[in-house]
Length: 122
Image (cartoon, rainbow, N blue to C red; front, side, top):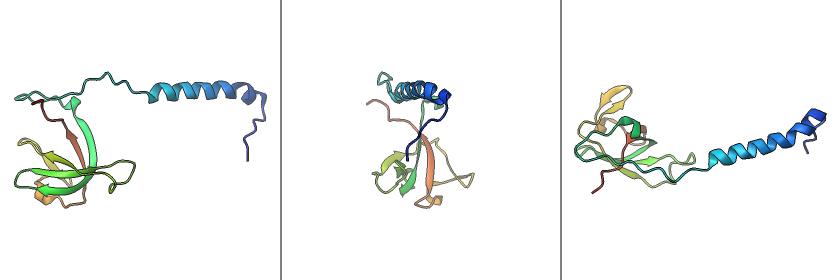
């Protein structure tokens, strides 16, 4: 089945629309690699605006050391991505069912939403 425009308006405007769509997709799809990656300075609180948002499944927890691993969601499939380790800072909070919780209270397999930073430069 083919799309056949039946009005003269569509016949005249369809190529312009397709060209505009291609230009828009090309302009928004290209990312500039000139942005500098933010790394917090040691001894200073980083601004929350510079945090990266992550969403993933909790797969490992070491609640005594406030560490664990999440499998970050990618392409809608959790099992194809490697776990990413994280360390919860002393002032960091975990919320479970909209209440403050400890890492040991969160069951494995829970989808977590997290804001995180890269570690400071060594």
